[in-house]
Length: 235
Image (cartoon, rainbow, N blue to C red):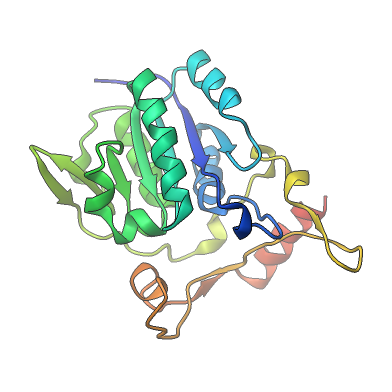
């Protein structure tokens, strides 16, 4: 079945209040959202720390969407995500995709909630793009690396996707967010923003998700690319 819409909604759930000091942009949906946008998809990001559920539901009611994506970490974000997804599932029929650290580490538990259709494991940009393209045509999930889903009451884990070799091809599109919501003023009165130019870590800390999620591999934007992205923020 062909789906003619190219609209995608991505959600970053609320955190517990004590977890927020300087609020950073919702990079776990911002990076893949920017990648989808660069490849022709109409992306709408809702950061539930600053956006209202009323605003989200108004958009969902007014637009036909290809899928809804959500990213969450272990902890309070799960509780809020469950409450929100229950409301969404009662009112809408589109596919719901989960990504991020917790769905990656606990794919089966995430799918068995009955609230999630597909899990995107590990790094999301290329996986979610291929998945979006597949959902617009045959919807043949077994061809998409890096996802997990339920088929005939069994959880299917497709083969792992390789890491992106050249991170410089990933751009951040600040038109998808209101950057002013993520600018903070420190104790010295200086403005700042939390920003990332690399992924992963080469170390072997037993308590860290990095061992599974990034396989102890560190990768980064080039110097030139890092400067370009910082200049975009300053502008």
